[in-house]
Image (cartoon, rainbow, N blue to C red):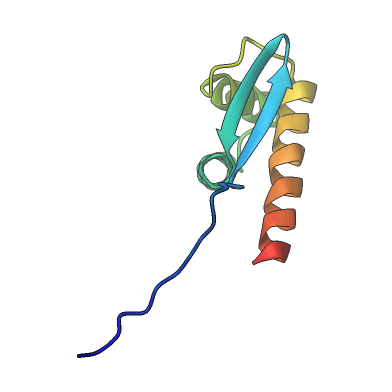
Length: 91
């Protein structure tokens, strides 16, 4: 009888980042958010700055946050990118 390989992934899911903005605090799946941001960028990179950022802010609001400025949406993207880099370094 052959032995089946196992993988103990532990008891903690470190793929989430708790983000608090405008009085709302939500656990964000970092990979999911990063994929949505990348898909949005690929589909909209040719748009003018204001139009691009309007859509980006709407994308972030889609996670459950209230309406926000372009600046705050940009800070959300930066936080996701920073966490992605940290998680990739842990792999």
